[in-house]
Image 1 (cartoon, rainbow, N blue to C red):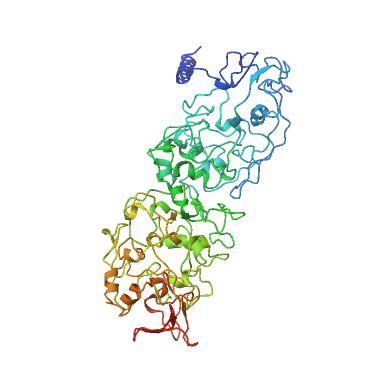
Image 2 (image 1 turned 45 degrees about the vertical axis):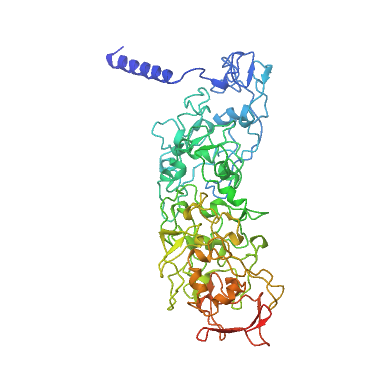
Length: 613
């Protein structure tokens, strides 16, 4: 032996010793089916003999295979975002086929070629039996050649290898197979996740061998963009490792990484391999409980109030759906949040720019109500996916009374004409306030939920506001509560942050049935939402309108005369200034004279509460 070959032999021996030193305990783990095995199934043969026969096997196959192969035909994974043309049936005797001879559940464990059927004790874990329907398992045995995509490592197609720096995660014959991710002979290479992984899988390292969040391809969106810096990739919250591990097998959210939301096999939400179907995936961590320490904000407690409706019937969310939700209205977590990019909002920046919790979400332009904006730069653009020009909108009674205005667009549920730059008057959501008139009641700063001033939220005369400054959880932390921010749900109607009463009447012009005489002007009163930005004492002092005080003391709500969003166009009788646009359910015309409002005279012509004006 030469000196060089001796050195090589020593290096190989050292590497072998290091590898053995890293693996402790039973190497085969639950694949040891011998009488002394500690897995769920045991029998009378030695450890290796269930899979391998020293002098025979299935058809002379190279691994001397002994377990009877399954003849099952499989239904492979598919989804609307799947770039591959499909999966082939696993080649009989090739890597994945060998694994499936036990794991599809159609061939009994111990049904060998050389030793015939061996009596066995126990049964496989339920989560390890995949059946013939592999739609809920990670795709493998793909149709070659592999197809490229912006979220895949460039080396997969270009060089036929993964981006795993250790080389442990590798293509098998240029394809993805079970043994790309799993080493069936060693259970504890990853000592935390005892899933026979080929390397440590914490922090998504096995997944990131093929999926690249940092890659960009011209004209295409990488759905994993910003993943490395997102809250789900970095959160140190400790996870409760249940059996089966609902939020992954590691100690923290960051370590679970991809496994927090996705699972490689037997996924409940088959498309994109979600651990829980639709909203249940998010609910594992965001509905209270003890899955996380410290607990994540309990968003689902807000939905339990009157909240944004979940999917119903066939109106399901899909990652490939159009941005504008025509005839497909639904509100899932991922309609407003991108789980791969979202971050906790720490500092509450001023409107209208979208906040970190909505990083990289899709929006619709407020200019034409159709053009897609990705990523959305303003919060209202995301809201316009449903609340703009989309068809199929309905006024759901569960959200409370809805006024009918004298001046109304053909689609009264489309807020773009009401809030857009061409509106006659509107709250400053989609544009700066353009009214030439002063607003004497406007406060310098928005108030907190308890009515106290909040200097961190400047509300200058020209200031912009968010949709969520009005539509928000009634106990949100941005304005002094402890619950999550955003329009998830509220105890008040229309998912409003604070109380806002609508006067109602049995018929136009007749007496109002829910009067609020001498109203409480604080944050707890019937017009608490208005009091967030407006000094109601100024309103009661008739600073801007001589009849404000009398109307409010008589029990009329703001909604009788004012619309909340804005007025698209004026008319010959109602100019649309100051958001004056009467509720036709409450007021009636006077002797068939058109309902009118003349701001220059501070007068109106109508019948309200049985009185002629």
